[in-house]
Amino acid sequence: MISSASPARRSRIRLAALTAAFAVVAAAGVALATRPSDAATRAAVPLAAATPTTPPAAYPNPGVVTGDIGMHDPTIVRRPNGGYLVAHTGNNIALKTSTDRTAFRNAGAVFPGGASWTTTYTGGSRNLWAPDLTYRDGRYWLYYSASTFGSNRSAIFLATSTTGESGTWTNQGLVIESRSSDNFNAIDPNLFVDSDGRWWLSFGSFWSGIKLVALNPSTGKRADNTIHSIAGRGGGAIEAPVIVKRGSYYYLWVSFDRCCQGASSTYRVMVGRSTSVTGPYVARNGTAMNSGGGTQVLAGHGNIHGPGHQAVLADSDADALVYHYYANNGASLLGINLIGYDTAGWPFVY
Image 1 (cartoon, rainbow, N blue to C red):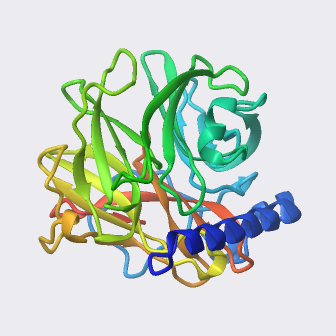
Image 2 (cartoon, rainbow, N blue to C red):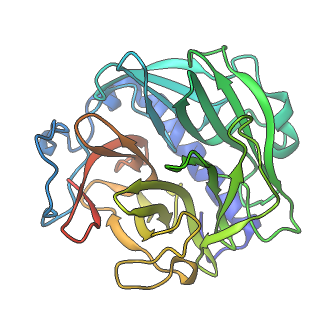
């Protein structure tokens, strides 16, 4: 999004840019996916014998991924069989699978027959945004967004499946919505389950920032009417929250600045932390995330433009940061790096 533009102008600009980016991916197909512009300079994501505590001198390029890697707003989960399932923004929510976190293939859509219950929020479009995948209690839980660009007339829905396969998902209904009179935007959901078994949903984009609500674990729906404010930039560009706990800290990952502008995107990955899931979250320099604070973890460099809308996967070798970025030609592609933590407990990518 573009923080300095009006909501209506952001809507037109983002829609045009995202449409163009996906058109580039479709035209280029697998040839683009398997031969990124700087593939010769990349190293595959390694299996980490031990997580490093010293960050690299410069931001790393994404690790090598192959196959069907054209995607936007990816979320990933480890499957019970050891493979991986990815969901991302697309018509009726797009799915990808991988056996090794390197080679990815198309796996259809969550709702191949459409999702008519979302069209009130999408203006009739089939394009559903920013899904969030979790596997728990023998089921896949999928939170996803329905909206139009530049609008906060938005909604987050829940679907579940026992297999994760296309067409097996059951719509569980509305979780939370926002209207033009609200000061928040109900998109970009992320489920977090704390060590006491309490369920939380963070979400938000622009407006007054990132919000957090409690969920009922038995239904995945809201547990009460309380909305916590956990990060914001005074109406500016912040979105795509992800909460994880490592050690004694809850880490709140977000994306700052402009998405969906192709190679002109300025998206960047930021993080803050707190000793409580409800905050206050602060950056490394002590600035509260509710006052615009955040510690930068990854930003554009070389041929990698606008990395963001991140997910954090706790995998067998290390935590992995999964995100999209833009190639020089404007295509949005999957990026994966591993996450290390320095001696003060602040994350970095390698």
